[in-house]
Length: 459
Image 1 (cartoon, rainbow, N blue to C red):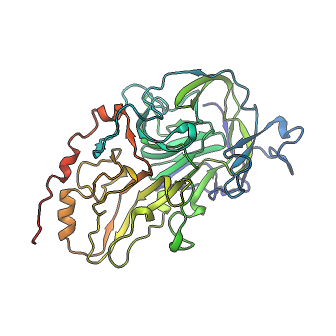
Image 2 (cartoon, rainbow, N blue to C red; image 1 turned 30 degrees about the horizontal axis):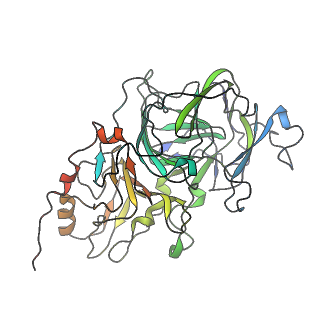
Image 3 (cartoon, one colour; image 1 turned 90 degrees about the vertical axis):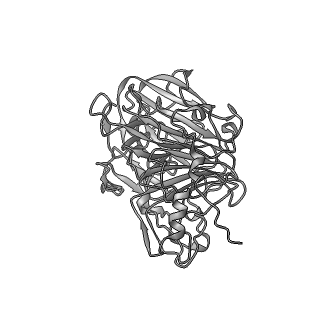
C-alpha cells in the first residue's frame, strides 16, 4: 500500500484501544460521536484561524468535504476540511467496469416475496478476491438517486486491496465483520476493526480494506462480514426518551481515526460506486494523502461490548428497539429509514415471562445476521455468517425446539453469553436479489423450523 505515515500522538487519545479482547494495533483514535475533531500527521499541517488561506501550510492543498448541504442546521451539518498533498480533483475520467455480484436500486429483478428466508454463510472464495470483488448483494429497497432506503450486502475476501481504493458516492457503509479483522485505511486515517466491532465510512470518503491477518498468497487470511449501505440520512444515535440521559451506546465509546497519509507515486486504481454502478479511474498518486484535517464528517468505529443493554427487571420484556445502536431517521419522527440493532450478551430475569423473542408480525422489515454464538430464538440452522429476512408482516418467532424449552424452563436468572446477533431494520420491504434467491447457500427448508409446533389448546 506504500509508505503510510501515522498521526502525531498529540491532542488525541493515543492509547491503543481493545477490540473485543484483541489488540487493535498501534493506531491512535479520537473519542466521541459527531465531534469537531482536529488531527495532523505532521506538525503545522493545519492552518491557524482560517480554513482556506492563500497558501496552505507545508505546500498542501486545502479542500472541503461536505456531507450535508451547506445550509442545513448546525446540529446536523457535517463537513470536514482536509489538507492534502494533491487535491482530489487531480484525476482522469472514470470509466464503467463490471459490477460483479454487486446490485443496486431499483430492486426489481424479482417480484417481492412474502416468505421467510434464510441463508447459510457466504462461501469462502477460492480465487484471490479483495473486498470490492467480494461484495455480494442480498436485498434492498428505496431509491439511491433520491437518497432513501438501504442495500444489504455481504462480503468475503482473502486478500488485501493492493494499489486499489474504493469510494461509495451512493451511501454510507456500515461494516459488521463476522470472520477476520480488517483495517479500513481511509483518507482521514486508519481504523482497525475486529469481529464484535462495527465501523461506518461516510459516503464520498475513499478507503482501502486490508487483511492484517494475511491473505491467500500468505498465511490464508480471510475477511467476511455484513454491510449495510445506507442511502438515507446518516446514521446517528437514537434518542433515549424515558430511558433518560444514560445507557445504550454512549458517545465517548465511539472512535474516529487520527490523520495518516500515503505519499507515493505510481499507478493505482480508484473504484467509485456511483448511481448503482462501479466506475474506475487510474490515479498517479494515492488518494489517501491527507496530512491533516479538522471537522465532524469522519469515519468511526464502535465496540459492541460497550453497549449498555436495557431490559426488564420484573416481567415481560420491552420491544427490541431498546437494542438500537444507530439509526438513520426518516422525515417521520420515530420511523427509521434504517436501524442497526444488536442482541449481545445479557441477563434474562423476567418472572412468569417467555424469555426468547416473542412471536411477531412487524410492519418494519428485518434482515438479521449472526457474528458469533447462537441466537436465542433459533436452536439450529442459524450459523455465524448466515442471514435471515423477515419482511413486512411476515410471521416469525422462536422455532419449535426453542418454544418447547422456553415455555417449560424453570425461570432462574439466566445469562445469555458468547453471542452477538444483529439486525438491519427498515421501514420498507426489502426485496431480495435474484442471485440471493437462487443461491446454493439459501436454506429452502427454512419454514420447517416451525413445523414441530403443536396444538395445546384446552378450551
